Image 1 (cartoon, rainbow, N blue to C red):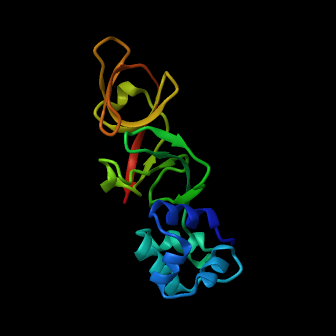
Image 2 (spheres, rainbow, N blue to C red):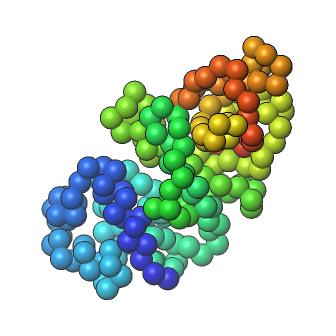
Length: 192
């Protein structure tokens, strides 16, 4: 297995740290950490634990993205399709490719990561929403979902009936009235 350098770069940037600051907090040399993230040095378990604690990330995710094969055995992965901003709008992203899926997650599921630092939803920063297959919005009333709006936006919100037939009101991180929806995928599980 290879080291997923982009995974670590994204985490460090999201936590507003530099590689040097992270290395200092871990009590190792920045050059050692750089070699590790570039796949030229094997990450030690104790280092993975420190990174998980400092960056607030599950230890297993750190180990899998560091290329520690033992951590990946028997764990399913889920594609991360986007990142939710502080107003609930989902931006497609190629930065984080996959995350460890929770037990029992359907195989055709996808994930959205909350990137909400320094917004009113900062308490949600780093959460991952696991969504299942598309369903009719009518079947998902009062459910929190990953939603495609007819105007092309993708958002995270709870669906309610709209004021005019064929439309829906959205509440939660994203809020709007009388929207026509192209698709809706219910959130199956959330991990923080």
